Image 1: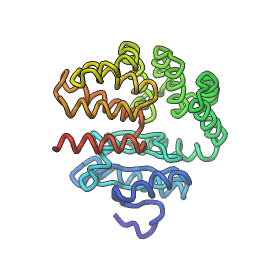
Image 2 (image 1 turned 180 degrees about the horizontal axis):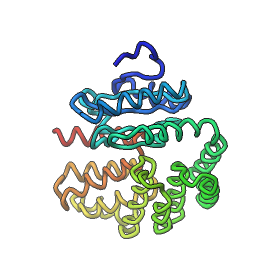
Image 3 (image 1 turned 90 degrees about the vertical axis):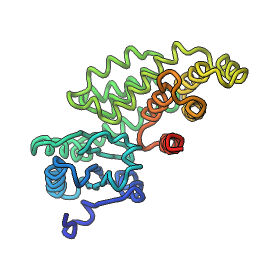
Image 4 (image 1 turned 135 degrees about the vertical axis):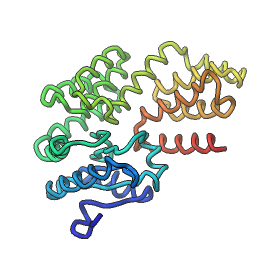
Length: 296
C-alpha cells in the first residue's frame, strides 16, 4: 500500500499506536479502523475501496489499518471474531462498524454517516453528551427523555439508542430496554455500542435473580469455595455499577475452578467486559488478566 500521497489520512498502525492514532485522534475527526490480515481474500478488495472513499472525503475522516496477525492483543480486546471487520471511532468511542466485504454504495453510506455526523448533526452530538452526563450523574429519567428526543430527530442514531437502552437499565426496566433493540436499523444490531448496552441488559436481568450483595458477600466470606454465591455476588455487583469488583470475583472463581457450571465464570466475565466497552481501561486490564490465566 502506497501511503506517501496521504500519510495523515491513511496509516498502518500497531497496538502501541492505537491509543494515539484512534482513541485520541478520533476526538478531532472520525477514525475508521480496518482489521485485516494478508491471507484474507475479502480484505484485499475492501481495504483499497475504503481507502479511496476516505481520500474522497477530503480529510473529514481518517483511516488506520491493523494487521490482526501482528496485533493479536488489540484484536482480542475489541472482540474481533472475523475479518474484515471495520469499526469507526468518534470522541474516543466506537460509533459504527460492519463485518465482511461491502459494496461501493454501502461504503459510501458508511462514510456519509460519519462525515455528516460531524457537519449536520453537531447539535445531536451535544445532546447525546448531555444525556450521557445525566445518566452518569444519576438522572436516568431525564437521560431517557433526552435520548428519546434525539431518536425523534434521527431514528438511526446508534449512540442515542444505546444510551436509551442503558437508561432503561438504570431505571430498573430491562424489558423496555429490550424493546429499544427493535428500533435499531437493520444490520446495526452488532454495532459495539449496541452490543455493549445489551450486555448491560443481560446483567441486570441476571442480577434480579441473584440476591442481595451483602448476603452473598457474607456467604463467600464464610465459604470461599461457594462458587454459586461468588458468581451471584459478581453478577449483583456488576448490576450495581461495581464492575471492577465483579471482575475480581469472576477472575477468582475462574482461578479456583474454570470448568464450574460449563465455564460460567468466563462467560459472565466476557459479558461484563463487553458492557464496559472496548476502550475501557478496566475492561482491557480484565482481558489481559484473563488471558494470562488461560495461558498459565
